[in-house]
Image (cartoon, rainbow, N blue to C red):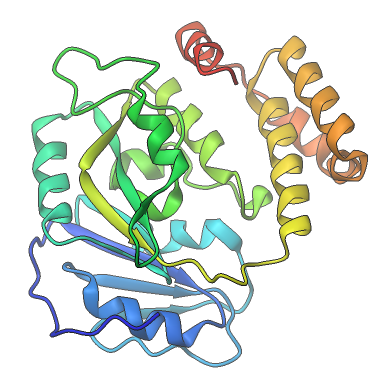
Length: 279
């Protein structure tokens, strides 16, 4: 991926872009110049510091996974924070529009953008699912209600994100969004899909280890269910994951005491919305 062009001007001072990276300096170098707001790069223990011209760099000694974003949010001084991966960037105008929407909708904590993938701009299937709006649009809402998102394509209200606990470190990566979405909704916040906000994503065609990713996603689905869902739903999630890959479920066993200590049921209206979504 090579993204050429002049350095953009800052379109809003109300949003900080938090980028998490690890050992992908070329990706950081390509995407940072396209962010039209102040940028904080959180380096998840890379062997060599990434190039961050024009951005603030926070280096971590260890890889915290998605929880590294929490550190960037705490360091931000703006009321709103946009997340990006090292292979994604926000389209011009999106950050300023997101700030305006969050100001206009004070009970909204999270706006999810439309994600366009690769140079062809293919619509991400997750965005297509959000556009179907199974939960509807609340009166006066910024967009259709959602209970999930892609971490590289949301703008959050900083204080609400931190009050809800941010991303759970124990989940590490892959599927960490679901728990945070539940906790924001349980706290009374709205989460909305706004397709006029656009994120461009350029994932590596080689990707990560797909089998390892699937197992971690399965583990995190089980842990998230244990943390927040009714016993019957937990049993359903465990049964489904056992059929798919028993080894993935075995990875939950060492975290079982931790999850049970932190178990907290969701409000009925949030649980009902999850059932509408088939989750």
